[in-house]
Image 1 (cartoon, rainbow, N blue to C red):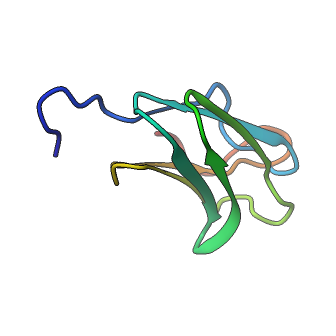
Image 2: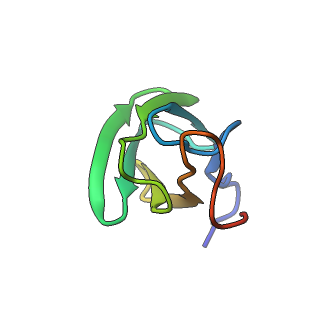
Length: 100
């Protein structure tokens, strides 16, 4: 819930996550530092601090995760949180589920 003057945290990506490939995400729209965490299912894949936005982070999608969900969670120093959930596609760029 935003206060007057707050900007929403924005998460952007160009390509959906694919097994065995890098996945890049950009986060912006907040002041100060932020923390970005990547989960596959409930397992923490990576976490990184971002001292000065915009943040551009890359993680490699592990083998054996096709059809699972990649969850990206950004939390800024004010406690604002933004989440993004994406289905992980197969190595050939095919996926069993459609969508966004």
